Length: 391
Image (cartoon, rainbow, N blue to C red; front, side, top):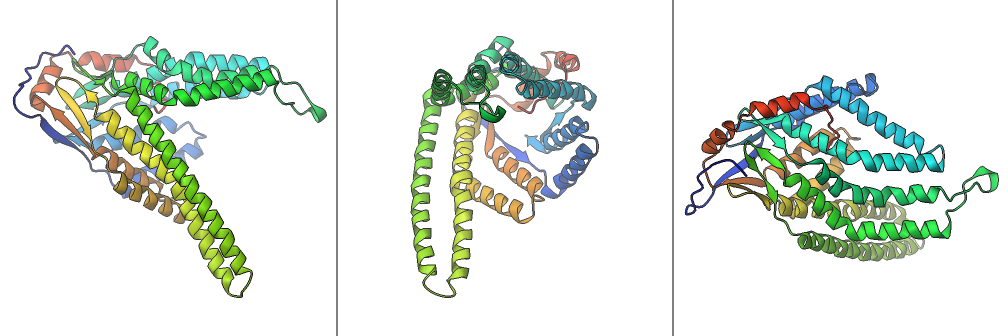
């Protein structure tokens, strides 16, 4: 942090709730037009669609009476999108030619994706503004590789290496990998899943530790042990869900046996199956996913800030879980047309759970940030490659 701001020690921090005023009906019109134009143009409209969406979302995100702004240019984003798409196509196609091509494609992906990720973060922040000043992302290339390369290597390279040991079997079909290759995949997957909370913490620390506004830069103070605690509770929750599912299957088998003994039980059987199907979606998808989203948002954003400002997230699991259940049901019943309304509802719940706390008035903070030459951020945005890979 380099910005010179007086921070009074005595008074409690000022609280500035974040507001989100977007509506599902407005976003539905943007979403349906974007979807049609993306299909008609075979995907070339994707950058324009992303800009329209981000401009709408930013313009409806309010802090202390002022909305955010997004200034990305679709033409530049098209260039970046084509580069990223070409990269992914080469990776996908190359991996089907031969084992060596798959290995080279995996190495290229692991070697280049962290740099693309950093470029995307810089582009997104440099084109986001509040009160006329642009944000910045100050993370360096080495930090991006340190955060992303280990999990990418563990997830991709063992399979590519194993592909070198696979020979054609009967009828030209590939045979099973060698025992050594199978062991390598198992070992790397074990390390990947055991280290997943650490990899996630390292990635979020890289992101949340390099957001900047003027001379103010944030840092992430979350401890990696707390992230492991969230994942351990998630595993416990998943095991409890599996036990409940087992009891449900047993009950279903019992009802089926009774149904075969008397007429009129077919309708009851169908109704029971539907209840179990909905319950299964709730238990295996919505509940664990919502738990992880709520806990990680509260943990990561409530430990992001610096000596002048700090975020405070208090997203509640119960209301968020009910919202996700409603979203899933309505998306299913409307054959997907409720999707934009679900996105708006989820975004509102997540954003309005966050409050910005400052130890100095926001007007003074903005004035000091403006003295840090905001035009430099604008120039940087103009020089960037236009990469936005949705991170």
